[in-house]
Length: 299
Image 1 (cartoon, rainbow, N blue to C red):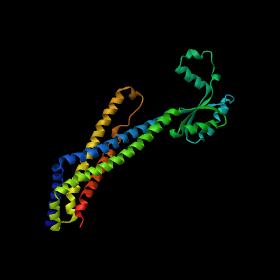
Image 2: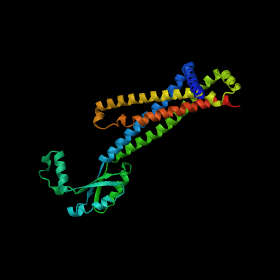
Image 3: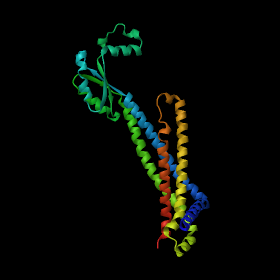
Image 4: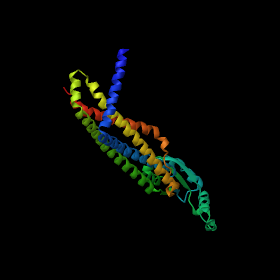
């Protein structure tokens, strides 16, 4: 019972010392929390941006259609017979056959029907509406469809696919580089904060070593200090990302852009992002604390 009580006292003492270190060096603690926030905020912004770009690309993959026109010389029955050949092309997810008459009816609905009074369905071609699996391979799919015997012409909107693919790749590269740089800076600031604390308490640490205190006991207040700063930075960064994302999304949805794109709800990533932010904050804090104290614990 006495041992348990002693352990609880030790935990209470070490935790109190960890909190004391934070307030004793307020400016450096503030700098540590701020840099962790900056790192995680940028990481969160680029993660959400990449998620929304991927969502738009997925929508484009559903909506972006390749139109494969059948040769004029083919009868409707012969044109329908090309379905398996079109489906067998790599990256083709699904196809829909549209007859000449159906194509004409669609155009008549979209435009002034008076334009079609003297035009019959033979003016149009039978066609296949093709949906692809991977929008980044649209150009190759277009070329492959043109090789199918009986397909005379293929139309595809390649500019949309290429544009979004490039943006997604740039965002992924930039976010990775920035997160790496800021993570290193976070650990550096954190370790310097705790080094300042260890320097001001170097005599106390020396006395504790002389009376036989273990390295773990000496190290723990600094680990707790880093842990608290990391959790604080991760939590504040999460709230900042949440507020910023909701504000931007609200502005976009209220504007013209809202009718053109749909944004990923923050609720779909809320809890995983909170877990990652707190986890990164804890890792950076504990790692920084260990770096700062290790020189003082060498024999």
